[in-house]
Length: 312
Length: 236
Image: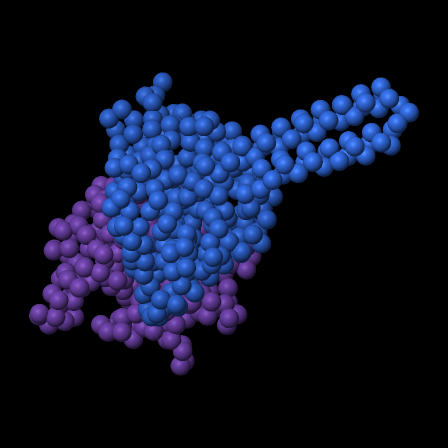
């Protein structure tokens, strides 16, 4: 039906398919609506963007902003909002505006402006995925843009210093999280049982806050006090992003798989051992204690080496 | 400005509107409008609502938590879309800027101050548009966004008299303020007001609030003062 579509976006870590909120939104929407999207994460190549990510390429069409990408997907008949009523569609727009106005400044701040976070986590992570020498320039540019945006949209008087602006945006973000939590309540997604555009946007904004390990995490701590939002993120990750084919699974997933393999081998060995024990017991019933002690020692020895292999 | 008047009148609080050229400087936050009560001065919708609430008047007490969340979300939508679109169309569309906005904004001041101040304001607004990504939008795209926003508001309003059924809330005041301004202000083209007029329940909503809260307070001067202050509010 549709031409093959490719999405270029930032990769992920800490269990997320992407660290970038807008990329996450698009990826989540594609999963919800069943759009067949090949995801190319940006790595150390010059083909990488100048910062205008995520980008959808389909034949000759190149589209860059999340809203436009979602519109394009809807026109291609991949519509996650099919069952929504008109009023719910209106609510979607309103809540997205709320997220962008209240939560996004704090998100940008946590990632790009907060000095400790930026220097220890964000900058190295992004720099490692951009080709040299662009890696020296692009993270700094994004940081300046983020600060600029925060100051221009929220920094007017009576807030005169950066600390006051910061305090205000975090207050707003926490209020926004509370409002989202109230709206979600106990349902699985924002509009019942099927995920929609609003769920994609909410996931895109909430998941990075929830999962990325920063030194300064006041927003994450607040989010963790809202269990239904945490459950919302975990559910989407588990249902829609765990079963990814190796084309775009993050490095974390690979090591988890390797660990899982080793664990399975260990369990298999143990079960083989137990079978041997059973056989020995059956064959020589008059010497049970000696056999048990020797087998226990053997088991201890076996356990020792796999554990050593697993430990980092 | 209208949204504040509407809000205050919905709370049944008497107000007097005064237009001053240096209003922006008198305001504690630099933003218009502001209210002056006794020896207190409060500006911007959020703090004014809090202030009025502290004095014992509130319009949204009857709402439950989810509805309050919805109300805040819709208020953000209006701020995000309608306000930014208004600013864009006034200050980033070259034709409008030259013919309407510059003369109006600079009218209280002598030359060359009027040109300098309006260029400064224009530069500020353009910087903001660039930061939030609206600089690349054409006027046509902005009008489409306004249309989408109006559609959302219209769908939310439906056939009810107010957004949250029988009682007016801050959201009604805010929406009324913006829509009335759009409908009554002269720009180069009527495209913006046409977009709003497409939604009959929105125009009926505006007319209803106008009749109930503004004309009810006699004095045709209050309506014209409101219209004049509406023009000034566009200059923000």
